[in-house]
Length: 387
Length: 95
Ligand SMILES: Cc1cc2nc3c(=O)[nH]c(=O)nc-3n(C[C@H](O)[C@H](O)[C@H](O)COP(=O)(O)OP(=O)(O)OC[C@H]3O[C@@H](n4cnc5c(N)ncnc54)[C@H](O)[C@@H]3O)c2cc1C
Ligand code: SF4
Ligand code: SF4
Image 1 (tube, rainbow over the protein chains, first blue to last red):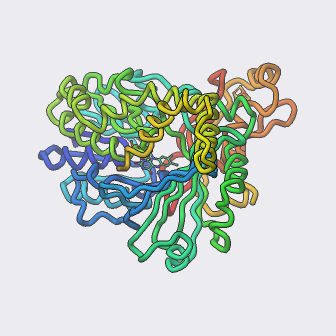
Image 2: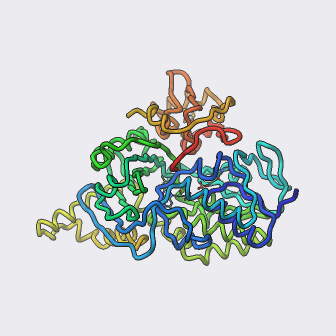
Image 3: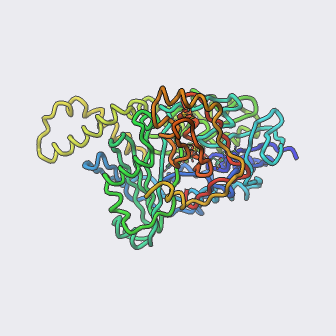
């Protein structure tokens, strides 16, 4: 059987590509290495429902609606906003299964427990044998060994890679509501933390219906230079931010980890010949807004569409035209600036100073005056994503 | 809680064939001289897959959570990284 489009990976990017291609009438195959879509994937996750509008979002398996986003800087400064857009917390297994089933309903064939090993001129080779196809969409995520092996892009470097570790704690929904001041089982909260000890990094807390996810992301180069392991950073941060208190009595349900790419398109080309990259494989995460699923779905949809007609050039221009994707691209310089270890330390202590001096009525601190504009810009950027 | 205990929350199906391999063990000695201990691959691994016995790296590949970090962290590109076959390895419930 000759497929029109073969998609590698049933994550958000892959399922969006397959959904779109199948809708256009193309014979579409998805190969996924996990035992089911999502079984290998890690996220918070909080998503902007609008970014998923390619799919039928009425049936989206959301855990809770995010009604408040709280930013916690260094433990002392807290800002809370009401998001203007619809944000939800979702578990990846449910989300990915839902997306893949939509691709299947559109006519795509999804084969699990199958790993693609190599891209060939005729299609792909998997650990269960070769499959032929006219176009290939590599939606293999951040650990993009196929894309790298095919010479489509280079590997990530430690300084452009964030290592994350995440834990899920569960109890019953009433207890989740009580601890987070939520008024019902549908309402949720998202918290983002910036910390600087033992190494600077960012944390997130999301509410599922009957559980809570907490995780951190730190630069790989910080881990290497400080010779500290991510799991040890997680434990220290949980202590210093009071997370242990917050989840007291909850039991640990899952521990997971994954890398996040912080570089990529447009310095990496999104396609070559009949091979297309989408989502994390193309490095589209926006680390300021923590939005990776949105760009993955959008780029996947565009890749699927253009792969059907063999339009590599059009795919590239369509990515640049998209608002969400171009946002990811535009924040790259800021990300490099903000996530630099020294700068990040400065900001966090400055923000803490700012808040305490403001509270005590003293606004004459010089470093603040000098930096407050940039600080404000950065904080707004951090928050802006969700507002 | 130790990482080994945390890993109990995951479902693992072991691939008898290791999916991670050190390409040149000699290189790790040089790495230890240059970077000291723990070496980069040990520092970034959230599942304690790598440990150093003073002479060489020991790999507990069956604990791997497939995060993708160690290959990137190794300054000598000394890790051959493949996925476990047929979807073996770890599986998540929440993700
Ligand atoms: C801890 C953490 C928290 C995050 N929080 C958020 C958040 O709150 N909101 C948000 O929008 N984003 C978040 N992100 C980012 C988001 O997870 C990613 O950007 C998104 O998953 C990218 O989607 P993708 O489809 O490109 O890749 P993935 O979701 O990684 O999917 C890739 C798929 O390909 C499969 N695969 C890989 N290689 C092969 C192969 N060779 N053969 C067959 N199958 C293969 C994998 O099993 C997987 O199913 C977070 C990331 C992390 C790590
Ligand atoms: S980082 Fe690379 S070279 Fe160094 S010990 Fe680890 S595998 Fe060996
Ligand atoms: S992929 Fe991640 S969990 Fe597996 S050995 Fe490498 S660093 Fe450790």
